[in-house]
Length: 130
Picture (cartoon, rainbow, N blue to C red):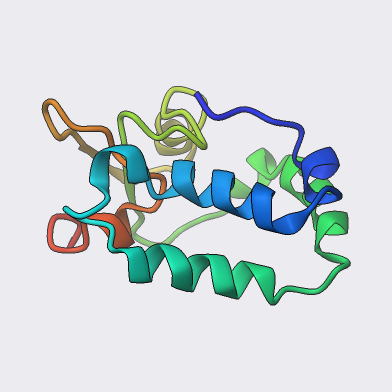
């Protein structure tokens, strides 16, 4: 599992952090050359590298508890998350989200023998169409 103290790592040399982060985010070890091109990795890295130097200050917002807001969602909601998401584990996020949003549908993506990336809409776009 990819775990790190984002705030402290974001304050270190960005190139090293971004390379490690996107390697895990896109699951390059398993998907590079199959579903993740070098160009996709580089594009993601370039966008992040061009972010404001103040970007680390947004990390605290990731810890905001929005659970009370979920009960107010009243539109059709489809939750798509891979079983092997290494950034946000499905048991801690996707399954809980499905339980919290009334009437939501959950489409748990399973790719037998493969590891899924965090952003399935990019790495498995043909498989994630609703």
